[in-house]
Length: 241
Image (cartoon, rainbow, N blue to C red; front, side, top):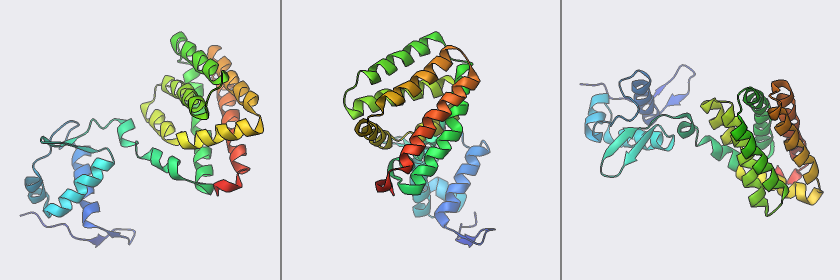
């Protein structure tokens, strides 16, 4: 018989709950290959007995891993390991960007300032003419104006296309999570009030031209300047604290 999992202290001295340990056991099975992407888990009763868990602890662990994108519950068909794609696993990361304020929001922008220029530089060496044409279309749509929401949609797509062109799905998922639609809408509304749309359009154009020239270092610099401008704007917004 499996020894039941109980609450205990980890090496750091912090208490580990039964559910957290159950989650760890399931994730160890996935990382070790005992459970594969797309594979159906045993029934709740069988799985709990096999791991020495109560059914309630197993249920809580499965629920938590489902929220994290590791497992998925299919109505009437059981619980399965997901495809474990980076975008699925990092999907909840975007929630942090959506609800953060003050210093945390500033720190998120600073992380973006580290990652996005590197991704843009990589994209400059890989991007094709079709993607460049789509970038040009998104820039044109932004410059034509519209509601803040419409501009944000084009802005998000502009940056998504660039990051996707870098060819790293993990990096794409992380940067997508940092690209809060709510925050971007607030930035664009602020730019409209302050009359700095032209400066922002010029920043996008510099990024675009660097990509057209397939110049990684120029693209890196252009992206860094663009995100730094967002960081500077955020520093002036006392109501975000």
